[in-house]
Length: 548
Image (cartoon, rainbow, N blue to C red; front, side, top):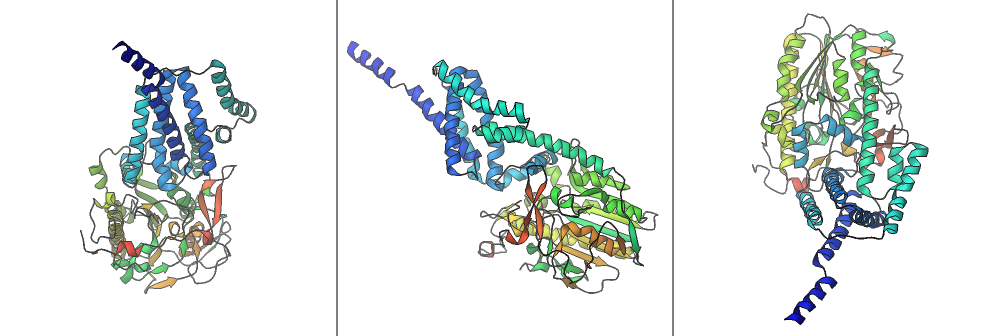
């Protein structure tokens, strides 16, 4: 018995299960975490970052178990926040920051729904590994000189760069290869940039406009209504070729349909800031020279009604522009904590205040309606209901939101007809969406369909259906609106007729991508070089389309 016990003790010393379990977990945790957060980077960079991560966590554990536990938990938390976004959208940029700050709880729930289920399985496995490492009490030892040299080596370059360049963003991304540190500091720096941009936007909106009217024709509609849609790609509308009849009003009513209108950007913020406000080059925008300030100068009473969520902390820049109208109404303000409540906020709720705005005593009125529309997850916009099954529940609900859009536009149109006054009604969507391999709709600046949106015009003088096939750019939307009211300005030097099949002044269509350059300006990309993302009809219609 004694010899067996001695043999067992010897074996336990040579093969410590806790020790080797810890070694395995720290290797798995570091490698998997790096590959999760390093999506889009070359394999060699991922491998290098994995090795750095192993050394970093090992050194940290030999110094202090408490520090190690805290940092492992924080690293896992970073992975939970960012890994789903990296899988769905492919990168973290300033649009991620703005989305987090501008969204509410229910929109966050909608986002969670479009994340593939296997992502959560991956994170569960990573969390289990994290739990095991924290539970192990095994003491990890490294010679003090090795610990000191390694930590000095990993921190010396960033500290030196901070002191010399004072540029946190480029410092950590370029010098530190422990990705949770890299990405966390990178996001913190983007948040600081966001705050500066936000303050600048508020200041610019309140600045005095510089519109200079050079010519005014007899066109002077009493009511100008602009409906801003949300996340509508044009090829999902029957009027633009979709096989299911989901736009009976648009199809049957007299209107002008633009078949090749390209939005300024692939996200709400980047697009609408260059749509509602004047943007000469597609990058910079003049928020003081907006549709509101132009129409005020023309003697119109301006009203902005929104069904988009507005935070009490940070408002979407479009909402800030809305506040510059003479009258503004936001139907959803503050926190919304229940999905049931969220589903109650239908775009049709804007109709009552819209009617009131039309009945105001002023002779000329501009009303802008901002829809909640077809934002992902589309099923949250329909209460989970749909009519035809199109390969996935998400696409099926999205089709239902298009039907709701068509019905909403008909109701707005009917109210204008009832007034028996001259009017112009414009519908435009802020941006489109990409359909991924799992038949989910996601934001993307890599495909043409994210920029291909519907643009439609109704009016007192429009008596039949007309089509404009020439390409038109979203950054020139104010050029269109000024044309509708017979105004020319010194600010807008476009010399073509927007509502025509004449070519514009641009040989190359350039649109704004999400990323920014080194000085914080947006990057214009060639639209024609973007990938094509046609609707996958083979997947959408391979089952009974009447299935519920």
